[in-house]
Image (cartoon, rainbow, N blue to C red; front, top):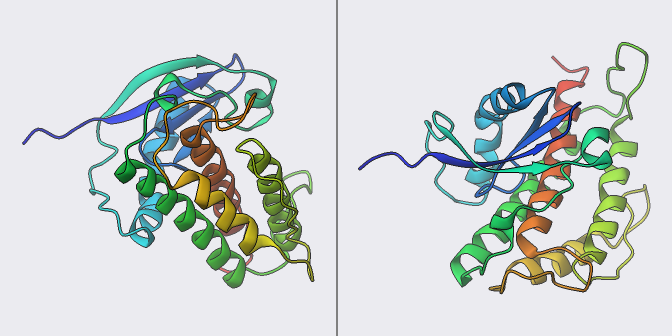
Length: 221
């Protein structure tokens, strides 16, 4: 049986390009141009594999050997700033029960990976060349606060905080999965909101992007 190429969407600006694997929420990397973004995406296959494993979804070793760019999207200022911000046409199609359950499982696995990373990396992380970069707890709080904003794009209005001593994270995530897990018609969940497929990609990307940053900036060898 012929190997199926990996479907990728590119979000393009003149300063930054994001490459996202459409069938694998959260597997998304950026580069200065299309070539760099695709190279970065392929290079992170081994780092995404544990996420698929946590979700109990088969992740072939050669999954990134052939990339198929199925859409090119015009990015915006958010893209340039550093986040995939434009939904693809492929994320506005009907989701079967099986596909919806799969995407919810991968989002839950991305959260699990983030929480495991938080538990094992030190609080103080290496700074960047100019001394920048959040430490672990501040970064985690940022992710949770952002998830509250993302949740409103799919009709959920719950408060949660990643700050020490705050709660509501489990309740917020449960509510998000309750929206992402059922079959969907491909339209935005609420007016001026997101489709469930784009929400899954954006939420999982943010969790994993910061989990991988924590790993890369960890002071533990």
